[in-house]
Length: 318
Image (cartoon, rainbow, N blue to C red; front, top):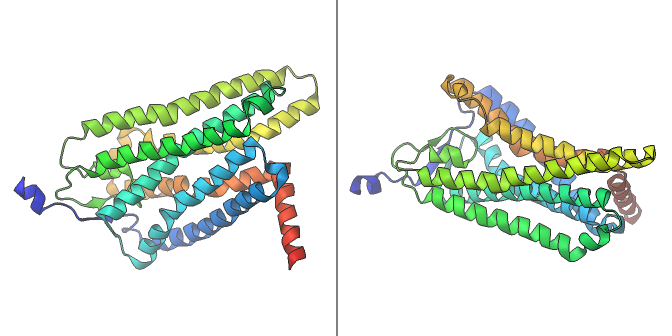
């Protein structure tokens, strides 16, 4: 016990792409540009959903929450990643690692629930249009969003607390850009079976259940659309769902690619594994939040009209 206390880790070293200096410069440029796009794109969507009365509906309320979440998630990790890439400062304090882990887990959990809520909203709008104003009243959709944020926060508190209470006595090098929970757990010098169990339960609640809601919602939506007599009605129904479905595919596809890779990949050389995980981490952490506002803007006439209105209003004010 004394030896553990003496060698207790006070900070971690994020390895990132330390073995690839040329890639670090490329990554820095790409991440910086994408982070700026994330702030501008999601910021415009949030402002549009607040100030344009045409967007005062449940779907755009959830979209505004999703945009705010993407800004929070990237802002909790991207600035420190940029600093490490340009200054070679790779150390992060124990408390800083815990904060980064909390925000990453909280935002990821909340996004899963929000995407499920958005799928349910589309299901009600298309399959029960006459009852939509009653079922998706303001009280209901605000409560749905609040539950998503609260549940994600509580889940993250539990997972972060369980991970950071473990003793880290020796190796403090995290083979990742961020304090990602699985990468941190690998460094613990104690039994992590409780962490694995709670992570499994968390994955069921925040990954599998929302995915089931999304799957069955779109099965009913597809059934309803195929029964429509009007081709115009079918196109309109498809267009309202296509943006959300695209975001879901990108989000869940990247997560499963990250965490469901074959075990044989872990036997690859450390350098190849490090570069691969860096690319996947960047895609999940930066590219996905950047694509969300672009997808919704390109595929949604209401969002396009709202953005144009805001830009014209700003031009008139100037």
